[in-house]
Amino acid sequence: MADGNAPIMMSVAVLGGTGKEGSALAMRWALNGYKVIIGSRTEEKAKTRVAELNEELGGEYLVGMANEDAANEGEIVVLSVPYSAHKPTIESVKEHLSGKVVVDLTVPLAPPKIMSVSVPEGKAAALEAQSYLDNGAKVVAAFQNVSAVKLKQLDKAVDCDVLVCGDDDDAKADVIKLVEAASMRGIDAGSLENSVAVEALTPVLLYINKKYKVKGAGIRITGVE
Ligand SMILES: NC(=O)c1ccc[n+]([C@@H]2O[C@H](COP(=O)([O-])OP(=O)(O)OC[C@H]3O[C@@H](n4cnc5c(N)ncnc54)[C@H](OP(=O)(O)O)[C@@H]3O)[C@@H](O)[C@H]2O)c1
Image (cartoon, rainbow, N blue to C red; front, side):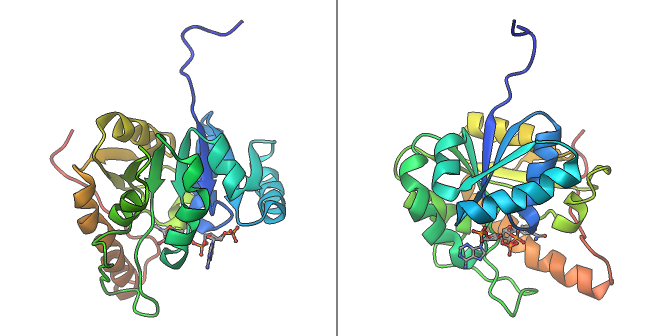
């Protein structure tokens, strides 16, 4: 019988979860009880990567699917692809995102100048995502300032805060729970418009990494208990 007091864990699909950032977040969420699906452009790559990640985790924590199936299955859908793949990825799964919380962690970098702020046409990747999704999907921007290098150290808490921006309070609350499940503090940082500032911080952090010869500089908000 189900324990009436047990928290109801939502299922999370990570599109592009075969990559660095998405796989590390997926592993953390799976270890904390979420049902996590790794999405890829091909089912075969998703399954191969999942086998590797499950071996690292020591159990059958993750499942792999093509992005379309993962987006259909997940109650929360995370976009974890490079900016160049952002619009095509969203368009390929749009029909499955209706009414869902969509977490966008895309940073609109303009390689090779990844240490300089690059503002996209729609001002922020997350704002662009919301403009493509006119089907009730609720885009929440988060995790853009968290390094995959730090996330991958699964036995350690990540020493940073995560700014969470969005226009729907319930959706932001769901994402703040995901931040906590990945062992960080989530800070409600206002409307989706504010993702312009959050996305723009990442090239600044990449510059700081190089300047101070560190991996994974992060941000911390002071004065908020
Ligand atoms: N890495 C970090 O430390 C970090 C930190 C904060 C935010 N981010 C942001 O998180 C997102 C993912 O970063 P990442 O480092 O994980 O990226 P990544 O490893 O380079 O790519 C993630 C996944 O995106 C898919 N992908 C790659 N190129 C694609 C293309 N041209 N078209 C369609 N899909 C493509 C691939 O999945 P399939 O081949 O399986 O489809 C790949 O495994 C980016 O927007 C990045 O700015 C990264």
